Image: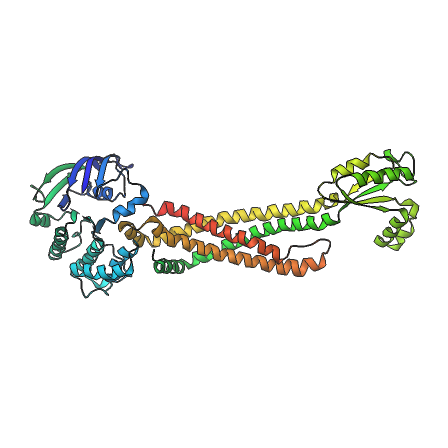
Length: 229
Length: 300
């Protein structure tokens, strides 16, 4: 589903490579944690998967597409097959919960009928039924993140990328979000989550990919956050 | 494409940047009005040409008793010389009509044109017989002039086109000035539109960021911004056109045309003829400016 072949990324202003000859593969339906200290290349990895950046060298395949050959005007179609969740939720403050989720479908031109059917369904999946008309600032952090997950998932993407989705949440709320991501993973969606949250990684016992200074230093199925940290 | 979404984006966007939008409208209006003025001056030059060229004729003055010069060595023009000149003119392919004016007729015309006191000091025999030549095509006068100017009995050939030279030079100078100022205004308008769009893109970066993430197409993301600029540009162009109509009514129709009747003047029909070009220019300027700006500030 995601395949990196000897991928390096060097930002023009930096001497240290953000990614250094990374080779890895994530299969369809997998749940993967990306761990590593800040600046180890996790965010660069996510940006490259979304084709927000181009690698300096190497090949990337996402959802069967060679990103090197994917022309710019087809990039939006790639992104429709990838859902993204961030630490800071990124909701629109002047739209209700329903509108925030519907927005993702509106702007890719989905018909009103489909929006009326899919948005309530996904809000029920993330456990927000009855809160459709709330504004984001009337919700707790965990609920806001659920809205963000609903928005990322409403178009049934093949891949869900999550960049420290529990970074702003307390441990109990984080567990709820992780259960949600796990449920989404069980529907066949590949989930790729960058995190610093040790307890979550240790609890979930999923595949762990550890990066350090842009290099792959560990790839462990049913792994833990780290040995000696 | 959800039309309603685009529409609401545009209206909120225009309202949010109201001051900048007003600035864009004013700048575009001024540049369009000046550009239109330039076009109207050109139309005025054409109108003047058309008006005068119908009346323009070549005058072939023949020698009288007192004449000196190469063609007048024999003194007063003889009947034979006059017939040769007439024949040359009538056989020339560019000549439409030839009228003969004798000294008596010339004297009458002189009396009509000048005060009595001056006319009294002149006698008919001091004036010249002449042929008035109407041309088929006023532009093609040189051949006729050169055909007759060497003939015996011809003192002088005058072409009234020469009299219009200074007028045309003034008009073209005015036109260059108006279009030059319009060009400067267009530069200002483009920069202002670019800035407005940049601000709009910045104030909506949250929305556009999410749109990019969920895979909205570039066109869909950029369309509200471009339409916003185009609407402001169109409103500005319309204001500029209205200003142009106003100027035509106030300055030309009321002030100039009734008082200066020596030539025809542009009318509101000429203004109408420039309107499509002016609107097109205004819309294109704003569309191009916003498109180029968005390429920089709303990347994939």
